[in-house]
Length: 215
Image 1 (cartoon, rainbow, N blue to C red):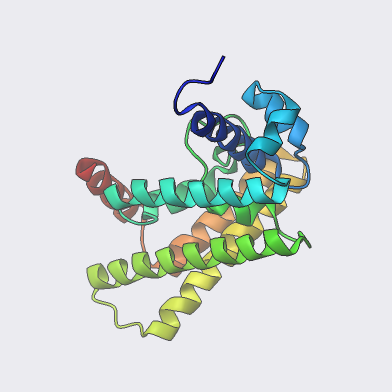
Image 2: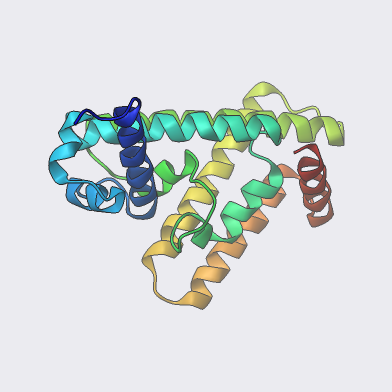
């Protein structure tokens, strides 16, 4: 009996969705093809009708995440301060406990540090550049709000420092077991990011409120 029209596309989408969920939780190395297909409720053999390797699936997952993430951020401000602070303040939101939010490119930065796979390193670079560029746009918007005169080089350095603080804090918090120390690390990162952005909690709330109204 032939498959219904669109069956292959739907099957591929299911595999990508399952892979994205698992990759965002555990990272590339800790997820197997068997786990992905089990999550998708499909047979292991069906994988190779759609992808020639786990790396190929990871690439497809990343590009799909980037596309979906871009769509949502066209509605809301690109990498809003509210979203950025939430990432720094609550690393469980990065898929550690089944968060209902879709993962963004930031999941690559948190999961693939130190991965030696050349294909994954290329995606890591893409993710880093994507987030850095979005941060630069956000910093420029804040500069207009504050009438600041930072030049392009200074803005880019701020974006680099924010990403380093954010990724470093979340990575450290994930590998220690003391919940109170986890909280303090993430809180310190949040304060550092706010300082780098030159914003206060009331500005964060205002910008978040504006973003929600636009959507």
